[in-house]
Length: 112
Image (tube, rainbow, N blue to C red; front, top):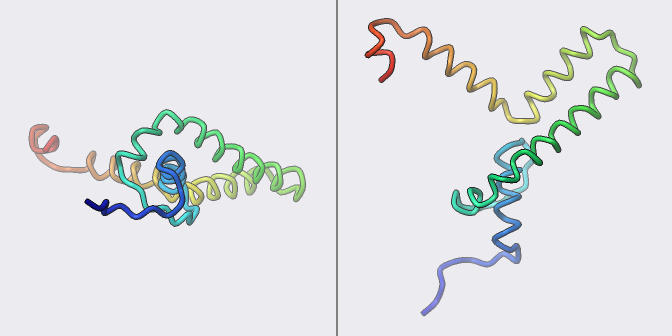
């Protein structure tokens, strides 16, 4: 009996972790993984968030301390960079929330 799985040399453990990074950011890691493999690594998401925060923090340091931009412009650039780096996930969620709040009709109609 043969397995239909293709082994690309990357273990299942690392594929799940890299799949979460690819899902959480715009980094093109070209990892093809399953939901089950990624779900086994959901406990790593806070560390991935810390990694994203570290990258955004370094960008913030560069804009404020190295380039000496005004705080308003630096804040706009830092926020834009963080939204871009995470693939607009949170912005899309906020827009979906706004769509849900604008539905007309009874509360029963809005919840479906």
